[in-house]
Length: 280
Picture 1 (tube, one colour):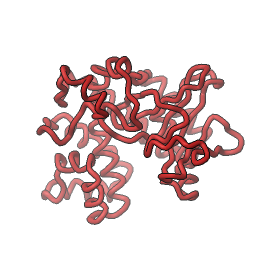
Picture 2 (tube, one colour):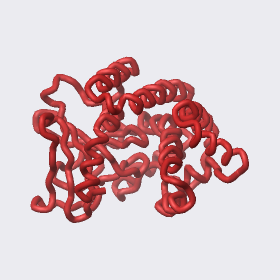
Picture 3 (cartoon, one colour):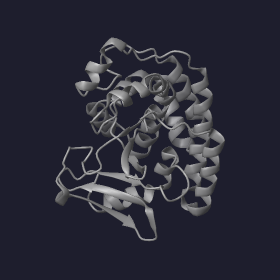
Picture 4 (cartoon, rainbow, N blue to C red):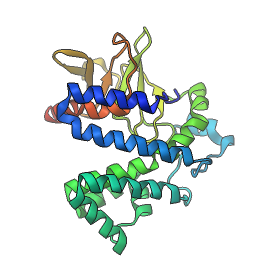
């Protein structure tokens, strides 16, 4: 399914509501609001895709379980994403000056290379290398800003081909646009159809409800979920085969649609609970 386009003003209003009900996340939600405003500005500047997609091979790629964007096949023009990345660092400088100043220093002297970080972010080897060389706080900041810097450009691809993907179908647990694994999803329609959401490119697709997106396990006895008492809208689906989890929202009776970028931040306590239970 094509990502749900929500107005920026409506999204910012949802953030304000969450700051009231989840004051422990106020600072993170404020940062998210700044990022979303900046994302919208950069998204409007994009008029063509920087990611090569051979339209004649879309059906074959989808049928073969291959995402449309291949980060290993071509040299990408990352000038616009890098501009967004540097603008994101200005937000980081206000919120986390020490870590951000170190990143800027490392970019200036060549210790860090933006293009290399982009390509590395899509390989496990790159993640492991960063983990060895960088402290935890900087890893989080770098990882988040590098991934976010690609979001407007990948959204452009999603807008171009999202309807085509939905029409042709996609049965994998990873994103058909960029290949990322989802962190959050939600239930829709009266039947409670399950949709997964990619926070990297904003694409949303239908996926079987009783199936692990990470390992494909469909055995009901090893698939379960837990909720937090007092709010049945939020739950965590877990798989005891691969020990992965995904947050799932059910807003069907709430009279509103979930804005999953916001809900992912407002449900960090669910991530903590899942980790405490041994899931990752």
